Image 1 (cartoon, rainbow over the protein chains, first blue to last red):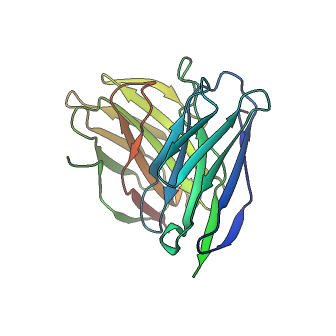
Image 2 (image 1 turned 45 degrees about the horizontal axis):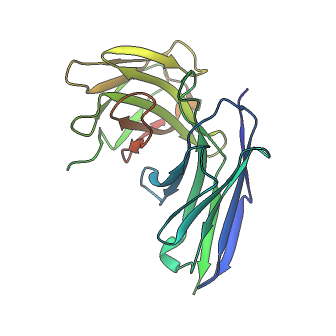
Length: 114
Length: 113
């Protein structure tokens, strides 16, 4: 079973702080790693994604760090705001084989305290 | 640009019935995937369609099926509903398989009683 393990399950961060969510994967064929944000009653929304040929990608306050040798990647949210309170999912996909679509982590429930 | 549209938003069905859910992808997106989201199992891949052909299927029983039409719209069907089929069913579209950038709809909340 291809898996993506996500931690922590829940996270509380003070406003203005840095939120860090980590994911680890097993399948070395994975070559696309997106992060999604989901609010209650809504579908997941793509935040940022990375491919394994780069070690870091930044878009606004969101940064993905990718460590190919460790098979780990993480999401950093800088200057966290109450509006960032949501559930975050990491995911991975083998674009070449495409056998199983996106494989998701179990999610991290993030709360930003004002 | 309109997003991914899923209908209906909510459904209540009785055990043993069947249900059909609909998904209209973003204009120009030809690949449609379906996912099941539950509190216990999280987000799980059901199947992916491209050019009216099922490319991949996740680990779900044959009661779960789907199809795609020539305009890229997709439907999924669940027959002989079980209580455990209660979930949020999400559709995602992308221009083509492997392109990334999967955009999800708001989902259909199915409750089986």
